[in-house]
Image (cartoon, rainbow, N blue to C red; front, side):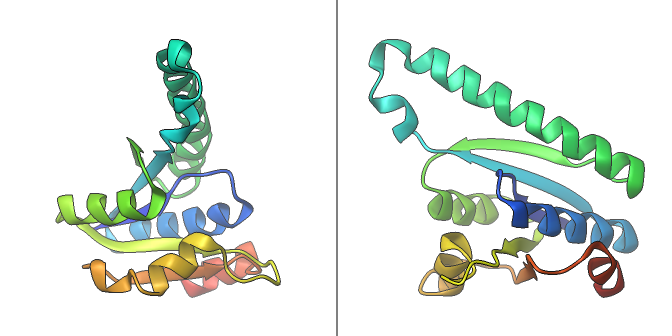
Length: 152
């Protein structure tokens, strides 16, 4: 099955990537996978409580995911899958794509900040693009819901 992969984070542009991926998956008979990447550096300073902090981070991601899962099921009839990994975001995304042949498209939201589209979009469309085996769809953060519906 053709999967659209999005990064689950708490950036505003992720909402546009999620909406676009859900609509495209619904229209093409595909699926959506949401990848959450937790930085292991968050746990290194507190060795005694690292496991507790890791569990709390996973719980936060799962609660965040549930909100978007419910929305996709209600509006597009798509039930997304959640994958949680630890590591550097760029490296983890690339390795995850390499490990799953069903991932067909990486969908990223671009920020609207004057500094650029965001570090993830910049990294994956720059020198690391050669490491990918799938196309990237970049959804501008400035797109409205109506724009996204029309484009998908």
